[in-house]
Image (cartoon, rainbow, N blue to C red; front, side, top):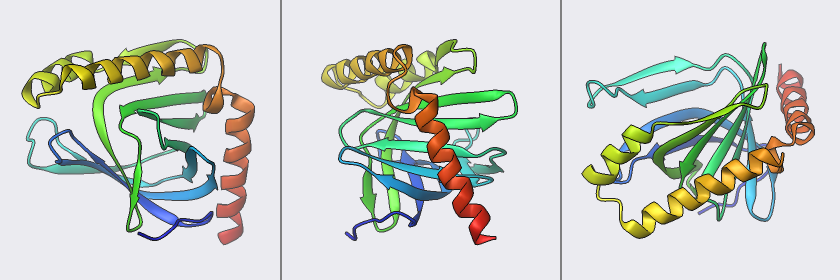
Length: 185
């Protein structure tokens, strides 16, 4: 396993509990490497996702805005700050801590998501999907406790503007990312 460094371009692979590849993010540019998390950026990146209706097929789309991604070594979530025309939105996945494997950021997604809007309002998404997969894929009670504990921690971080929810920090990383991509053009 090679060490990553600032400036590396990685792909992001998201799996389900049974090991099935669910989503691929074509590019994440490493902006910072901290003791317990990494920060990446992307813009107009291709996303390939398993079709929820047909299950065996994939569809793809391209993101429309710059995004800053935070992946944690020991937290069961990752956070995406999206810079849209109407303000900063956050999409937070409840997921295992990430691993790096041969140029890939990998994690297991556990369905629950936290969506945060520019005005600070938020919603927990996909509770029914979580209940369905918990039964179908056999999430243990211990796993269920970890997932719900980390969802609570994530909500507290948001309420207290900690880490990526500190907009000054997020904007600093976005500026760094935009400076890099503009320099490369």
